[in-house]
Image 1 (tube, rainbow, N blue to C red):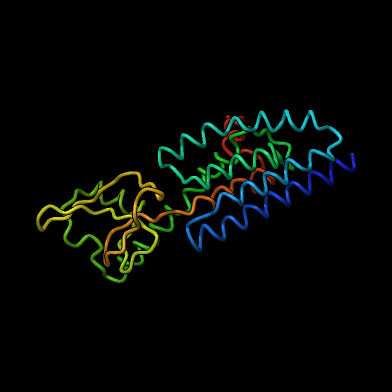
Image 2 (cartoon, helix red, strand yellow):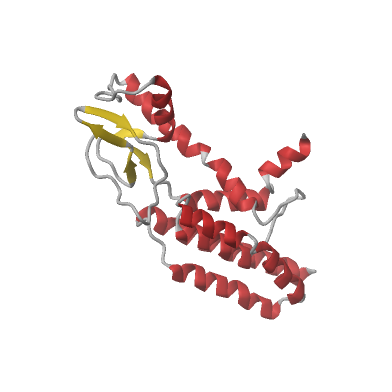
Length: 230
């Protein structure tokens, strides 16, 4: 039992180290090399050599890799980047369904927890826009839009004076500007650099995955826990 506890701790450290390095590159360069996931996944597999219950561990990894096709489809749809998909698969290999809580978890727990954390960037956008309005900035100057679409824009983006790592939310018809709501794939589209433009931030989703994994370790599955209480 003692060696199992030690291996559990080692795998958690490996997983968190991988995510920390990945988040650093995702924030600073918006690009994470595939070698990172290969190296850390390899480390997770090497631990099987000293695992007293290798068959059980391999079975757990196989079950956890159910997340793989979902992650790949989400990547191809542009919901997040390739690094995010590979991170989820690497976590399934290194720390399959690991948690310190007694709450039920699934192969999708890290992803579902991360999805809940998406609300944080939305709130940041709202705060940015509220601050701009308080400063008496006309954030919708030049736009011909209904109130409902403006409210949506306030949640998913903001008017950036000097855009960085964001995608344009504007389209122009003569002198009139309209808001454009669409999914942006960071690997296929260029970031907006035009000054004073409404953008939707290119969220480093790997941060949310890291947060979702930490919540899984400490608490478990947020959505599943709520559903079980209903």
